[in-house]
Length: 297
Image (cartoon, rainbow, N blue to C red; front, side):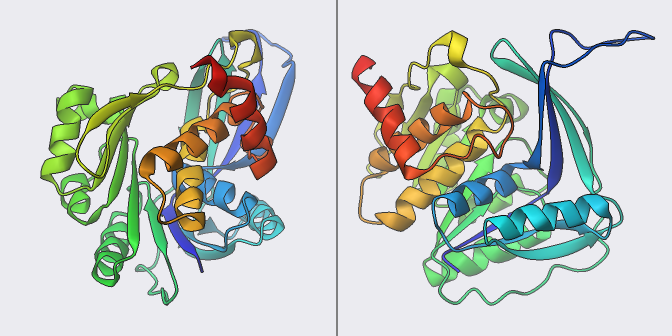
């Protein structure tokens, strides 16, 4: 494996509709997409789309949605290490005007202990904080081996504070800042104090506030995708994570600014497509986004 991703799997049903019906109302959606979902899971699919050898430790149920998920993973040649749950998790997503409402049903009551995988040859680990025991176990093991560890800090988990001690690259959401009582700027100080070599906070259309290898803070603006081209922002952050992990694997000696510039172009591609699968970019797609929009920054 080139990279190991650990997280919670969903089947995402994304519907493009003018409004959400209530009561006895009915409505017809303009379009829909059914795809894989979950933070680290979508990042894993993104890395696989770029051609990386990906292993994925994730929840897996023996039901028809679980078999659908395995079919999706096989298409991208992802090696799935399923941790058994009784039922698959599902999300209903309604994007609208640059935002997205999400309704989820999740089964994260794992029926077995964490599996012990052979991580020989692994060069990067990416986590979203789900499967707290597995996240901590593999983060500690990868840190001991000198393997890059990355965290999508989308929300507060049971062991977030402890886990950050073993994370090299922590990119967090404003939601996590709020949960911890931090501003984006003070969040960077917190990440530095936990020992994260690279840290940042994503702020949607305002881009990424982050510090580099020298601890210097800067802002990387999002690419200026025209508002009328933005269809579905759900999954854009997950694609961002999968893309910077890919960029690191392809060019481990490059500066992190370069990895994040690659990733923001991947994210710009995602927001212009409905659903996670349609929003997975290729290298050519990233190059086109950069050619179109980087000159406007």
